[in-house]
Amino acid sequence: MRIIPLKLGIILLFLSSINFLYANEKEDFNIGYYDLEKDIRYDEWGVHPVDIRSNTNQLYKRPLAGAKLGLKDIKPFQRMAKVKFKLMNLRIKNIDSAADDILNHINSNNIKIVLLDFPASELLNVVNKISGLNIAIINISSKNNELRSFKCHQNLFHTIPSERMLSDSLAQYLSDKKWRKVLILTGPLDIDKAKSNSFIESAKQFGLKIIDNRDFLLGNDPRAREQNDLDFLTGSAKYDAVYISDTHKEFSYRVPFATHKPSAVIGSSGLTPRAWHWSYLRHGAPQVHGRFERMNKRRMTEEDWAAWIGMRAIAEALVRFKDNENFSFHDAFVNENFKLDGSKGPVLNFRKWNRQLRQPIMLSTDNWVTSIAPLESFVHRENNLDTIGIDSKTSKCDK
Image (cartoon, rainbow, N blue to C red; front, side, top):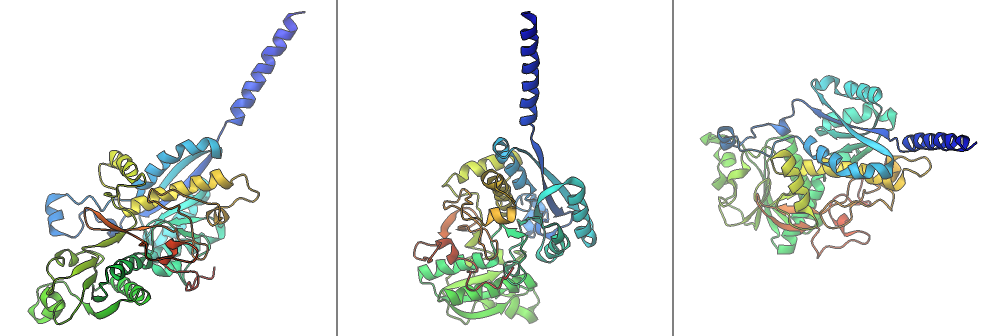
């Protein structure tokens, strides 16, 4: 008679262990990461001639490394979110079929959310192609202002700052220093002109005066010396600072300490605005950079940081809001209770009007963070981080 309770106890223990295993079985949560095989933004050699000879240019590496660090850092959240995070990378070989390739990859791998490392024009094609899936997309590398304005999309979020956030940060710094007269040097690319236009808007907002906007050209043709000779370009004008827009940095590296008149150099050289810089020493930043450098044997770039914080945003949203009825990342990211630690000081969250991540901007030289924007002297009625970038009242995003 005593054998029956013993057998019953064994059976119950067996059943409870099975229930425990099933209860702790985690659902796969697949995160799609998409980039281009050929992307000039990550040219291995860069553009400075020294880089070609020495192979020391470690900055032009893919931000996939930042996403992988993020994946490692969010593993402890898996138990609370009741999921198992997986990062699935597809590197696109043919830009013409990129949107279709990504759509097929999302459908065949049950992708829940996307990190996208594409230039602006190609990025929009992808966003429009997969819009029917109503899947959230995190832009980690394109700073294009139009993506946060009249070309915004309800599915598109941004962890990399916009050009306007960067130019506003520089304008705040110059205004604070009372260096109000600025000469602009603009490169030959469309993106160079877009950056200069962004700075002009920032200058208007923060009370700076643009002395002149001069185009520069690469080369040594003596007939074009007014556009390729630095003495001519920076002469015959009174200014406190020189703003240079040179995306590929083929010209700007020679500008500091070489202007016709003594002045600060900002923009693509000299004092540069960035989302992240390896030399920042506060708010846990050295620990983040240290983990990244140990994994990748190089310094962490702002695109790496944008990918890393994108992964953290995914985990944060799941942990805080997954149990809510009709959960979606679209709602979670703009929820007033969504809070993110980016190791840059203030709590970070997304703006509702254009889905841009609010964040401080580091104003740095090549080897040191000189200042952080927004500066203390600039305040906003709701959030001081909104003193940089497109405000809700001036935003043309209506989606």
